[in-house]
Image 1 (cartoon, rainbow, N blue to C red):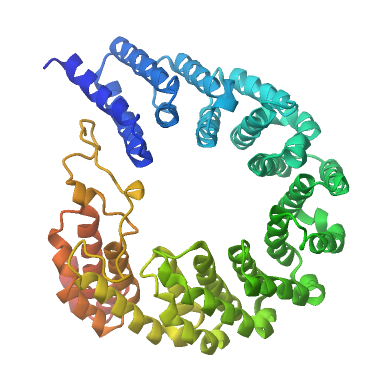
Image 2 (cartoon, rainbow, N blue to C red):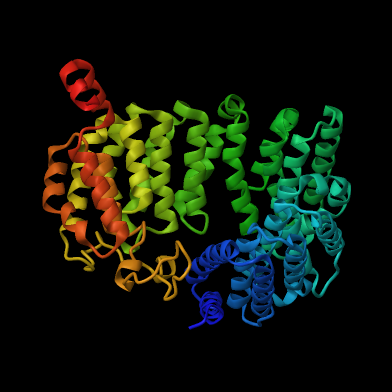
Length: 565
């Protein structure tokens, strides 16, 4: 087979995988395409590589032009990977890529949200990479986006959504070029923040506002000028509340969060009034408004903890515990808010922990129904972790009874993180945690491979799996990995069990027994990831640590000489 034919086959293989419906396959194909193109750049003459890149970008254009969203996203992924690949005619490549992305935004009403999001991120990457033509396409996209913020009915929602996605990315990745348009941004962003009928548009608009506030914070403007911008935003928030529409109230609450997060001490003088406003809307009939108030409570607590504890903490926790008692759509948000408030106020939350722990227990009692836990039980787990960190060892007696319940849905990365925090913040619980965890690890590692063990093992979802590509011609690409091995992910139960054994078993003789009876059998597993984790676990538990070796050498001069020799 000729070199040209082989190259065409390899390129075609990667491009075909970019059409795949599975996101993981597309991501891997895009990365392998970059590796392949970089390898070809080192082997081809300049002229040959220029022709090769022309052919490659034409075929990416075919993907971008597809009517299928997953194929269009595959083309965008390919652009994202190839942006920073060195090319003699980099200006032409940049212009082509900018035009391809412009095609995606040309008719936003026909695009899925995921396509527009991927395209805007890639546009931001293209702007960040820089080059002689960057200013031209960035200024075009900025002006078009500002115009689209003013779109009327019909396709207005779609255009505003595309506009705020682009504005966010360009504010983050090209702040110098964005700065002259900050006044125009503040003149027109409020339609998207407060008046748009779709929550996804309002939330994306607030993310764009956050990015612009970050630009203002980094500029060397006079303090009075920054306060002028912040006062303008505060006035717009008030206008949104006066409009008394659910969309405008929701948008205004979201913007309050950005002022608390990004304006330094500006909110000091407005803090009490802000607390009163947030609490005034906590029982609003609109669900999004209710959720926004719940999510603002921790931000208020973090902003001015002493004031919040003295004036608002009891009322705040009464409201959140009431939500936990009633259940409903905001159950997870309430747990999240309680945990963050605990971190903000510390031991001041102690009088309320018995009630909170009672609700955590109720949530954990139901988690065995879920694989990996539901959103509610995951937030309950995080809440326990944050309470322990906030209150410290004195909380141990209250949460000791929760340890068994935490394992009801099996091992997960979240569970291991929570157990780690409990071990640090409440050391007296470490023996109980180790005992229960080692039982769980033993059940996972001893089970026949691939068998679901009554909740201790989980099925690995294909969408999150590492899928091998049939073509791995480029250096660094994966190939010839059996499918059974390729679907082992970092969140699979065996991998988690091996990691947990290494992290929690260092001073426990039972852990060394598990190493010899269970962990070593994975040394010859077909999955590279499992072999690696098994090796790391065995060496971490059976070999002395670097500190132990150093200490031994310091006390034994003979041993030191032997090592040096």
